Amino acid sequence: MKSKIVNVLTIHSKGADFFKTLAWWNLSKIKVKDIDFILIHQGKGKVTSAFKLNRTKDGLYKMVDDYSGQKAKNPYVEVTFPDGSKRVSFVDFTDTPDLDEFDYTAIELPKTKQGQAQPLQILQLDLATMKIVEAPKKEKKAPKKEKKVETVETAA
Image (cartoon, rainbow, N blue to C red; front, side, top):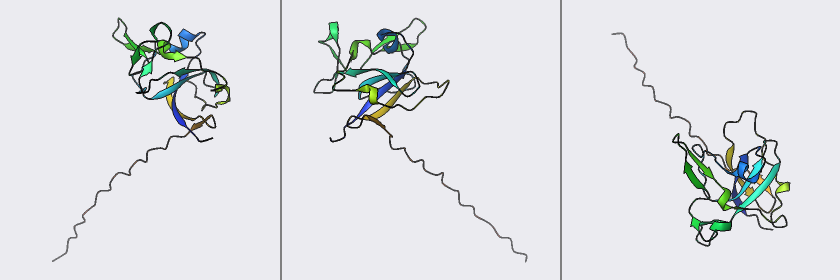
């Protein structure tokens, strides 16, 4: 099988139900773009549930259930709370994947450390092997060394 790499959004959540795991997240530290699946985990490396996002041929995200006729550029609904903070909900865009098509139980996620500040992460998943693919790390350029010009004093 040819490998197909997709972006997945992982959410570290201990929410008891569908709504509590997918609603009211703060996206200030992460850019959610081009994701195909949402994986829910509790930080121990095991996926507890998974959701797929349906897309149209032109790449827009298709809403589910009552809103199935609507499409959006982003896979979430943004709400501004009275205190001015913006939160998003993925509930209206997610569908439970068919386990025959997408067996999320085989996926091993990197374990998160105690007190990790960001519960949302974007990872890449190879659908052929169901393994997380390490994204190539951007090499940091070494800072340029300044050339020191030495002046030599000569005794006259």
